[in-house]
Image (cartoon, rainbow, N blue to C red; front, side, top):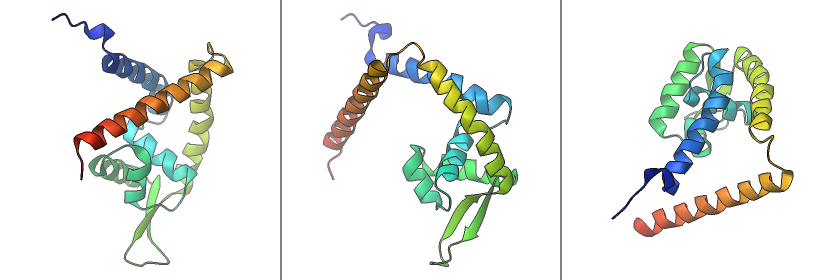
Length: 151
């Protein structure tokens, strides 16, 4: 049986994600020394302040260990703080510090610009079609995993 990795869809997706991710990562790694996990956590907290670590996990596509490490690192750098939830004192919430907010506000326009550069050769219809196709494949993958692991 002949198999060519270059033509294998999952491999193509991995290369695509890696190259696109590298372009965006350059923005927050070069100037701010953030890892991918740190940037994801920072960006989630920047757009939805006052989340639990579990809520960051749910929104990030990262597992609990990666979120925990990212949050711990961001706390050491004084970019994120942990507070007690006013409604439920057993729950802690994560928020950006002022320094974290300042960095977030500096990085966001840069990653938006990187996004525009990455898609500059696509028409608006092509961008929309690409998004729809990626969502369809993600939904199919989700269904396959659900079928493989029925609860």
